[in-house]
Structure formats: C-alpha cells, structure tokens
Length: 233
Image (cartoon, rainbow, N blue to C red):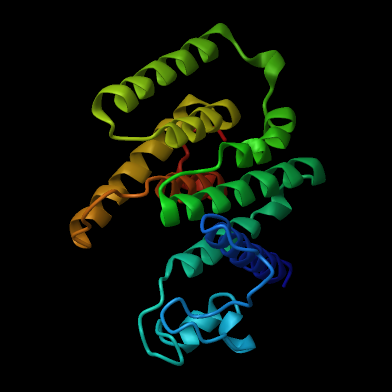
C-alpha cells in the first residue's frame, strides 16, 4: 500500500514538472491558461488530467478532436512513479536528495524533449545529492582522473562530432560524481542502445533528444541495482 502511495505521488509530481517544462520553454505561465489540447485548444476536463489513467482512458487520443496525444508525459509519470516506489529503502536525508535528483531529471528530460536543451540553472537540484550522497573524503585520485578522462572524451564528441550537447555532458559528469564511473558507463550503454533502437524502429528523422534516454536509464539503474550485481550503487 505504501509503495502505491509513493507511485501516485511520483506520477503526480512528474505530471506537474512536465507541464512546467512545456510552459516554460514557450514562455507561458504555469498557472494560466488551464491545461488544454495542443491540437484543438479545448480545455481539458478533470478526468483527462489524471496522470497515466487520463492517457489510457482517452486511448492516446484527444477526447475532443481525436488526434494523437504525445505519450511523453505518461512515460515521465510512469518513470518517476516507479522510482519513487524505491524511496522507502533509503533513510530520510538520502531520500530527500534522491527526490531532488529524480525531479530535476524529469524536468530536464521534458525540456530536452520539447526544445532540445536543458536549463543549466535547473541542475541546482543535484546539489543536495552532491552534498549528501557523495563521499568526498573517499574521493581518490583515481576517481578524479576517471572524471577528467570522461570530461575530455565527452568534450571531444561535443566539439568535433557534435553527437551530443553540453547538457548531456553536464548530466553524465553529475552521474559519475554521485554514482561512480562504472554506474555511469552502464547508464551510457543502456541509454545509447535504447536511443539507437528507438531511432531505427520509429524511423526518427532530425535531432534526437538524448537527455530523456540518459535520465530514464539512470533512474532505472539506481532503482533496480539487483539487476546489475557487478556494480555497487
């Protein structure tokens, strides 16, 4: 029962954060106007705004104009909801840090999906994690060298190949600071594989937002560490 409550809370928070991201990137107020269909501009009814269920009950189409609704918000809601079900395993302080991190990733995933950039100031949500979760006194020279190597390699890809953006680099470095080199490499492997699969299956054209793949992969890895017994999270 407790996990269900955590899931509902996470899904509702993700719904709100996705709304904020969608409104902010278009310079709209997050309060007015009320939520509406992007296709027909009809104001949504209360039942249509229920996280996850609203999308399912509408069969992925607007109740009014019957045009397809983006599933991104629903995916965000499921991802954060599932992550929140893992919070009871942590003590209060680490739990609050993970709430800040996961909320930041949800917001960044949405802004990248909508406008292909992230607000660097929003990364302040990682500060509690850096202060609480990182054992700075145990950060060895090897850790710093691995971090530097990661930064140099990613910087090369940004400047030479333009395969990823600076926002992606910022997140990857933060992942490595919080969870270590091995976890970050696993996250990169999963996110890259899923992104390639999506690109091929969906026959995606144009620029692909990579932050959602990074964010969901990171939350997945730290949520279910038992699936990755070769790493320590």
